[in-house]
Amino acid sequence: MKLSELFLPIVKDIPTDAKIKSHQLMIRSGMIRQSAAGIYSWLPLGFRVLKKIEQIVREEQDFAGAQEMLMPTIQSADLWKESGRYDGYGLEMLRIKDRQDRELLYGPTNEELITQIFRDNVKSYKSLPLILYHIQWKFRDEIRPRFGIMRCREFLMKDSYSFDLTKEESNHSYNKMFYAYLRTFERLELKALPMVADTGPIGGDLSHEFIILAETGESQIYTNKKLLDLKISDFKNDKESLKSMVDTYASFYSATDEKFDQVEFDKKVKKEDQLITRGIEVGHIFHFGDKYSKPMNAMVNSSTGTNTTVQMGSYGIGVSRLVGAIIEANYNNNVMKWPKSVTPFQVAIINLGKKNDEICKKKADKLYHLLNEKKIEVLLDDTDESPASKFKNFDLIGIPYQVIIGSKQAENEYEFKEITSDKINLSLDELVKKIENLYLN
Ligand code: ATP
Ligand code: MG
Image (cartoon, rainbow, N blue to C red; front, side, top):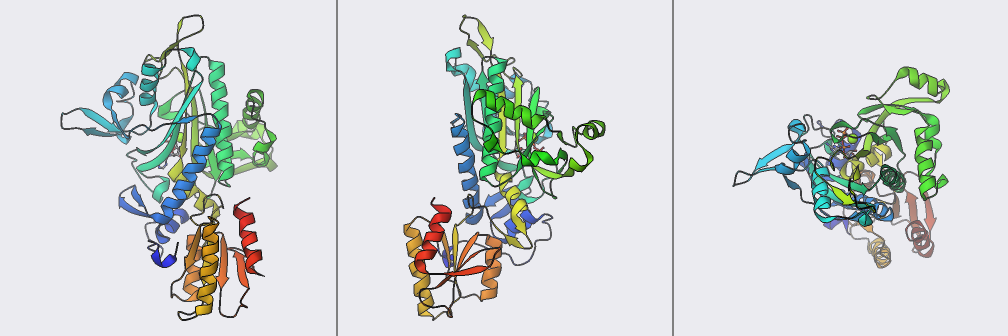
């Protein structure tokens, strides 16, 4: 892509209503635009990042054996009356009436709908275990939408639902999702800490939130520094290891303010290991047994022929909130640096040559075509702006690697730099190899 052709409405000044750095950056770099309170359009730059995050989330769900499907955004109110949540959900639910006066709603989550699909279509224990998921827009009429897409009203969520015959098997599904979440956040280069959580309106007996550390987070968290040292590569992907992984994580005290208990904290965590900071919730998993399957009659025939109510769990990731969370973790001193796995473009070519500098232009075009052929995603700055303003723009765009082309360089010499480090000089061959090593291996 050439910068001169990219729809990228950059804003020079910090918008006054944007209180945190991710919101500021997303507006300034033209990633999103607000269309109503807490409702946003995703412009090309933001959409590229969103899609990449979504794809990583998808791949890790598939790896865990979950199957992707797609449920609608609009649901029938009748279903929610069956589960008993229609009245309880309160004002966060956007309720709609169609021309026949039928009550509908814009889905804030999908436990009811997936339970209906399951109960109408699965009759035997032989179809279990089953984990289904979709990645779909949700609407919650938040009382105070703020921080851009971090707490908005319409947002993209991945939600999975597990169905099992027994509590033990259901716990295993929970553990598989726990593992999938850690793998997902690792690929996004985020350190997400699982914390025992309240179950809120979803309900149930077991629940973890996944929280990334950030000063601007909405939750106060109390944890053990040693939790940060745990690595998922220490655990294998089989039933026993996954159980011991969840037990290991659970053995460290870690809680958000809702669950915090000072006495327990002091008893379980040595003073020097105590970490009190703030964080952002990026995922939340629930085990809730028969909370929905019972009132909604989701049953299967067991091997002995008896009708058994299934055990369920649900598992959410805030796909769009993750864009903001990644920015909070990586935008420092006015320079953004995207993780390689989700960067909107993989390499920037910044041509500093003057408008009529044919040598610079030829060099830039040659590299641009070479990298495009290798399916590297390149953004070539072919505009006439001043070098200073070009670098400022790229600090906002946040592509982690830059190739700089200028009139003082030798013909086969290219400046390469990681956005936050010093530059090095490379020949064309060396440069292409370097980029291939970064992205294609
Ligand atoms: P919160 O405590 O932040 O209000 P929640 O506990 O109500 O979130 P869940 O029902 O657990 O949210 O939803 C799963 C995930 O969806 C959350 O972990 C979060 O990442 C994301 N999410 C929830 N509400 C919003 C929102 N208003 N804007 C953006 N993302 C959201
Ligand atoms: Mg939650």
